[in-house]
Image (tube, rainbow, N blue to C red; front, side, top):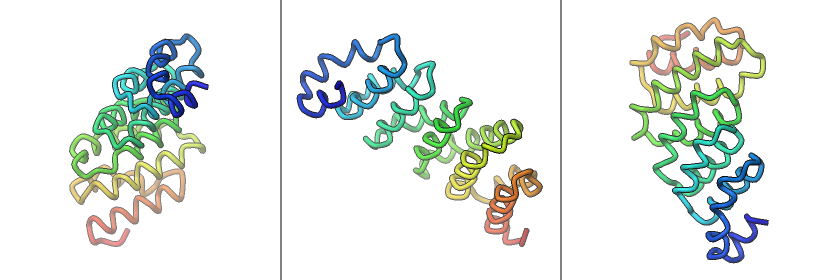
Length: 173
């Protein structure tokens, strides 16, 4: 209802939003993030992006991305430290601007290493997303960080690492 209210009557949505941003139920806060996105309420989105529940963070970050707000980049970099794979996928999506590369690449490499160390079969999607973003933002100076992934437990991750390293170094892998 709050999201619909924000669409139909933005002034009423703005009036109601603060109570939902601080609601004790995380699902309500998640919809508050969606409503804040409709209202372009950046301050509320930044508050919700720091929520202890990753689903709320993902909703807030998605709204910041959709609004094309520069605040999405630091939120995304911080989100890469979290455990939730959906949040990590959302964070990677936010880091598509080459201007963010100096801050994004170290965070992406750290997240890739941490997730790989978990050795979970379900980690393919976030790891592939991170590798794709590294391919887009990085260059041969990061090649040394990808060498270990040539023998990754997931064949697709190893193949993607080989593809990136071949492109960056000009040496077939």
